[in-house]
Length: 633
Image (cartoon, rainbow, N blue to C red; front, side, top):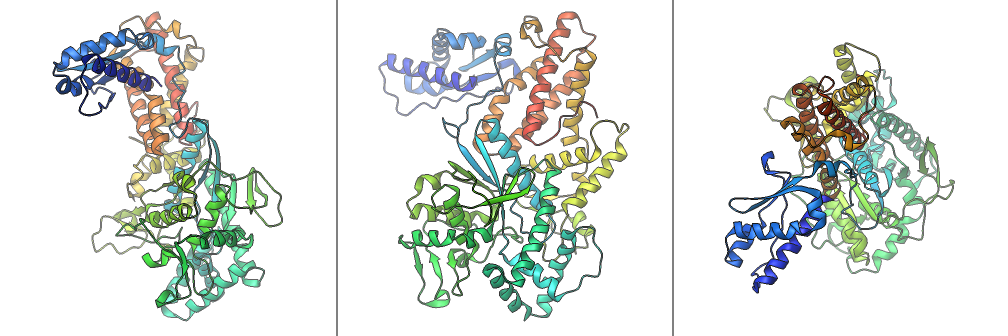
């Protein structure tokens, strides 16, 4: 990538100057290359001369000029940049050679993860199979799917897993609810019926505490398998998972493998992990106190973040002490125990392996009577789980290190994100008491409070359909799904999204609809021009003076590989969103101020090439974000 080449060239030039000075720097000079805020200062800038001034006891401008002369002697650098300038008090500014750049493949990126392409296993979604999905679950899925697309773009082999907790408390609650409560209301979807049943049984627990003992029995039956309750739980879970998979597919989200927690238990994965853990000095059975009889993973450096808020439905929470327990005194495994076994398998560290059978189109599911498949054995693992699960994820890492798998622990990444809560107005619309005046209200499956994904999609589809003057081409539901997806991706990962129904269904401003219309506009311009665009950059006439709006679009297009690399390095989809929105805003300004089809021949060729390059880059970004590329709207 050009920025990396420039950084290396600057570093070499600085080392030469320091060496020739005969001085030994008091500290290492950190060569930083930045994008100047003012476009008049070029595409890149460095203040390295000012860093050296004090150590070399020379004026920054003089040092900058010497650096410039050395860079001009570098054939690669002088070819990439049309001009290198020195500006007070000592900046070195670089101006891109646009014609030369246009001939290069500006979309190529170098993975910062490793020099060799890796097999990366991404686990995301992992919703408890006991009710319909809500908007918080969808944020997880959108993040995970976008990361999978991003890493595939970078050349990695990516395998996407969806972990199904079919032995957890939540499924047990729904089973108890079906057996001991009644739901009179009719529902079109099984998951919606289970949503109400789950909420109702949690209310019933308060009225009939003895039912909690029934949940404990159901949980034991589920883990034992092969009995009436276990079959009932399996039927519920499979039906719910099929609804989840179909629902996510409407947002362009797919999986390679469904891994069922029951497969880990029945396949003996935990038994092997248990033997490995017993050989360490951090795993022991407690002999005294309230944890007597429990197998516990002693914590070291791992610590739990304070102030956990909301209800954690996707992962077992418990208190700080409970997270260390892997096997309870009654023999029941905690979620963390099964997760440790699962991660040993992910990295190919167990003798055991799953068998698989088809669950859907191009989707495999673990199953005892299935076939063998080359799945798992990853070089790197990414888990997309909300930030409340930081502590359990650290415990998995700690267990890997304790068992001697430090390198694998280093390749385990937890992509955490802020939870989705409800704005006061949205919460009030769902019947939540907002008299306490909070800025946000958590969703709660136990109370039946939340925005179901299916209901949001239908509502958004109706809004878009009502505002469309033309109904030809892309469907309103497809636009709706893309708009919702973009809304959930554009926030910084650690931001808690305060979901407001009115805001989320807007179609102007920084929205998915805005991007789709811009892509369709570029397609329309090229179609009216009578061809798909200028394929040969030499025809684009870069020698002419660029208009400010043309230069702004070119500059942003030039930064696309950097944005991709930053998004991959930080595992942050919002970086792609920010880049794409800025690029589209600049292009729309260019379109509004610069005539394209009616411009003079030389300008027309340049602007058509610019439109073609914008369409190509936006198309790549939309694909990574899991959004369509409509030729008309």
